[in-house]
Image (tube, rainbow, N blue to C red; front, side, top):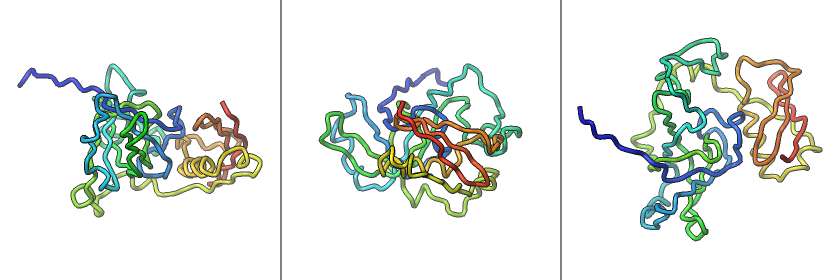
Length: 229
């Protein structure tokens, strides 16, 4: 076998309101929450983006930079199975992998050509924490990348519901309409671990410089506090 080793370096980083892992969508494409992909100065070359504006979606290859471990495990505990059932790591999208590589399909909203840090990509549906290093961007091709008949394994069996969100006016008035919509979309996906289902418990989700407090009872999310942090 060849001893040649390729050193990968980030070409970009993501900017968004996800300042902590709790509350980030478990998969890409589940929300319309916006993010920016900001490239390192070396790659801010207009020619490198020529033609990308013709695509509606792109793939992002990135690093689970907040889930680094010195050792890997062949099995993991998927949160959607309650955290008490083990599955093979290659049958999951767990961040704890032999190589901490993530892959996300997101909508390309637009390219910001003339900003100070441009060209930058505005995308929606990303499931990356703010500051996550990105190693590559590729166009999504529906004729090659989409398999409507594909089986979803255990993941397809346990996911497929949304919670209802109760957003009292006293808290909605503390945020913009855009922020309120983003918060609602994130909470609909139920960010709690599957094994935590205590209706009296108050959870805190950090998003866009805010701490959002909420409870869940009978598949309804009750927002009970929003504070700037």
